[in-house]
Image 1 (cartoon, rainbow, N blue to C red):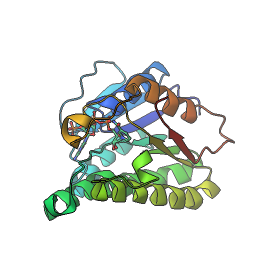
Image 2: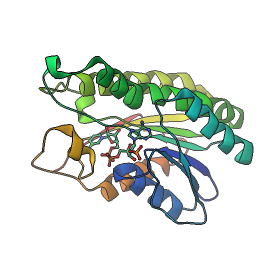
Image 3: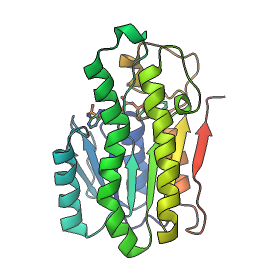
Image 4: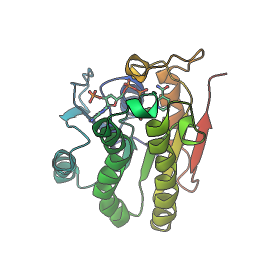
Length: 223
Ligand SMILES: NC(=O)c1ccc[n+]([C@@H]2O[C@H](COP(=O)([O-])OP(=O)(O)OC[C@H]3O[C@@H](n4cnc5c(N)ncnc54)[C@H](OP(=O)(O)O)[C@@H]3O)[C@@H](O)[C@H]2O)c1
């Protein structure tokens, strides 16, 4: 996809990977809407921040309705908002479990269902879901996080099969550790990290592949 003049929505735009993706999309010429609870620290004539908690279907509907009213369609959706915690199962409160699944998984469904109709009409578009290596193998203490990210992989593969016949690409990117605020709350500290800017470069390069190529899944780890 040539991103010049395209409309993109990125969830979790206020920090880390999402913020870096917004920057790269703007550099590539896209009009970018960022969704997050905290203000997204980006000033650019083609960037708009929409305050939204992605666990709220009302907030998501409102945000996407505003974008669609203005631009008619969304060309690219990056489902990135998410967080994790790693601890023994008896120490996980049911409300925390639900909040994690709502943020990491259900929000992808809520956002994707808002962009699919206009992408189908255009017979083009791309949805990139940020999964994790924790969505490929279990991790001690990661029952909630791994369950959500395994589900993200299943969701992504199913949506890819559903939308490819309409010329819409769905990809799931599964990163290992990235140096972001994620680890301020996660309850673990990895030894090796990638940089959020490098992840963003990878994601945007997948988007910029020729339209006839469908990269459906990519796992990337720190070397
Ligand atoms: N860092 C890693 O090692 C790593 C590895 C694999 C996968 N990931 C995945 O990468 C994605 C981005 O994480 P990150 O590493 O960039 O962490 P981060 O710096 O903590 O960023 C997380 C982003 O998600 C947003 N977010 C969280 N809950 C939200 C909610 N309820 N509503 C709206 N936005 C919400 C945050 O915005 P607000 O707080 O402002 O709402 C923030 O912009 C996540 O899906 C994470 O699981 C990260």
